[in-house]
Length: 90
Image (cartoon, rainbow, N blue to C red; front, side, top):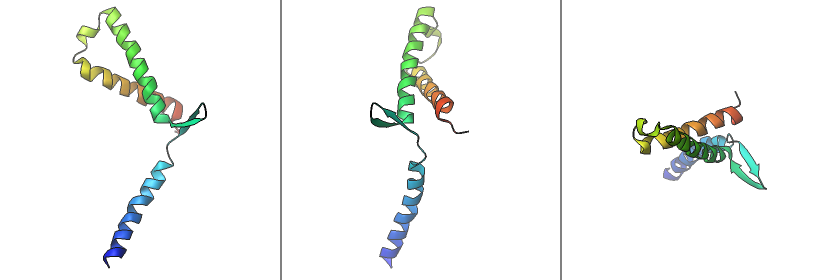
């Protein structure tokens, strides 16, 4: 009886995981497949580094607050916006 219950739990866990894995868009870059969120995260981090230079050049950086919190949040915000703009199916 214990084996039947354990296999039912495995099936109940694996079905949602299999359906969620098929929802991620894949981008082909030079023959290698990458998940779209990974490319968006890289582009968002690069854009945050560019904005950091802009903030430092204009003198806004001292007024932003804790920089260890601001720049990772800015990178994540930009990555999510890029994902929504280019890969959203709405």
